[in-house]
Image 1 (cartoon, rainbow, N blue to C red):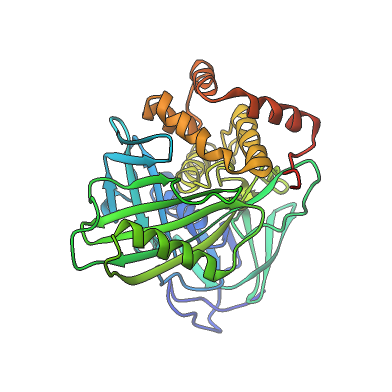
Image 2: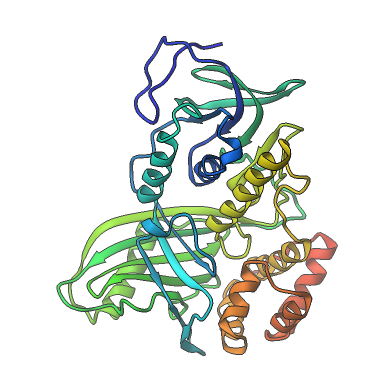
Length: 408
């Protein structure tokens, strides 16, 4: 086993002994891994447990932004970049500003999240150890789990794996990407309504796909403007830029702006069955554990919910919960239906979301997307949209034949 005790959340110090035995091992220090680490740190009954965080690079850059809606306080409220009490939805057939009564819409910058969690872990140096290492393999053993890394071998009772998954595609499942480029822009004049983020603006050419723009105003002169697509293939970089320039030209009436930050990403949108665990001792987190909502791409709060579930079970029983996620099968089915429509005729998504927000209370839709609605509410939601695209996709999903766009 490799010796070398690292500095906590700093550069590794080599050739100082490291105890190879830990209670919990976290393979990956992104949103999912750090969320679980934070929840473990806040559970008084687990403060005697030793936790090893293995991450190939230090999280010291603002590499992403997470947005989410919630009707509960979160641990990260003090470091939110912004929060709002209303949303705008825009499409050719329906536009509205939607007040939020129970929920608030929140944005959290990656660097603020990383610093917040790292500070919490640094306050418990006897409990948390960080090693800069790339995990090459995790293996179940009779005693727990062994991690083989480029910095040596480490063991723990349980391992929590948030590394990007390697997916072998199945012919009966749907595989799309949610891909985006966002520009945080500044103007020298009041250009944005700081009270109202634009949740979806479908008034852009759909090009037989689901395409919209997302606007987060951090003030009247600064906003994140993001061009987002759901499709089977990614675009060339200049295509995102052209779409953003055209949207901003229209939004700002041709007046100048400055791009001060950029972000981009591609999130797998699939009904592929991601396993919640790999053997008795390895729990999958994040994308690897199916925490990305297949029909929307939202994942941050789903990661928090799983982290809280795991920490509570470990504190109460010392073992993993029987149900690692709390997912309900009917919502996976609903996600598969929408993915099938997106894959078969993506431009229809625009009208589906317009019907959802036009014919339902906003809180019901947000609860539905959060998988919190009852059977009665689910029926109300499904009855609010044009049925025939979904009826066709029910047949596609049940028969294991993913929909395909017809040529021509």
